[in-house]
Image 1: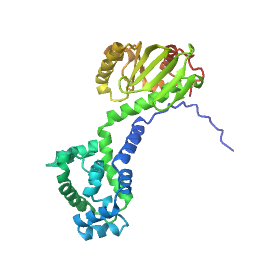
Image 2: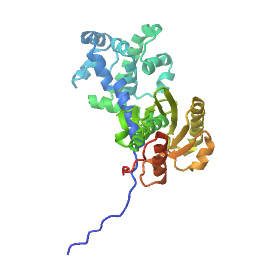
Image 3: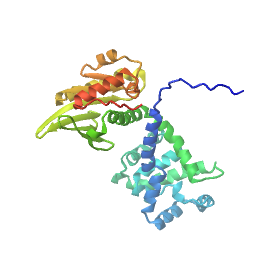
Image 4: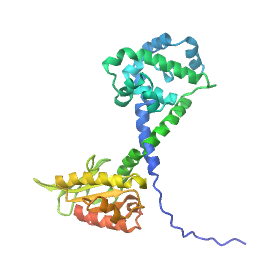
Length: 334
């Protein structure tokens, strides 16, 4: 006898993987600037014979033979002056491979002078003569690592680098969460605007024509995080400034609200009529949070704006329609 089926009535909320989204964004940036992609792009534009000449000059043959047995070129593990001077960012490639944190590496004797190579991608003229001894030092460090390995491959090199990248990303968690929250909120904000109002859009800007035939531009920026401005003919007005505080650490929320207040004071002086703050921390009520940033005219919790069943979601929908002068969206996403 078959068992009766039971339809689940559970209504699970959607948990946005904000940290992992942020990590993915930052990891792409790191790969493009420091890791395998950066090395391949740099080497493809250089004279391979010159790279080979420097590898032969700075290393014993047995070390190159070690890499050759795995079908690998020398620069995948060993830095040479020609490569580093061509792309100073690649100092980060070898630091990540060796597993050194920025603090440990650049606090070591003589190494701190080279921090600008990795952070700015520039080689100061006064350090040009020191690139060769720097590479020779790093070559010896890399060999200490490779001697412990029984095999080597591009994927293993990448894995070792990522083991260093992980803690560095964790260390910049608040920055990552902030950037992720801004990107997520911008997409959320666009979802409240019916498509027929929008005339153009990309990842940083939305242009629409409202009910009064006024052009309104919504832009991602630095200060404020998101600005809304509009105008007809020569009449231009600053409509809305939004500050987004995406960190979810409750212990630091008062500091972030203080930062929002400073930004909104500036926004008020610039003439923004509405000044909203969006925070990720749900443990603090809106009244308490608003008391920390009196220049904020409306305050919302980001997780609530991602939940179509929440009161804040409906409130935001109505308020946004009012400031943009558009009809509140009726068919809201679920």
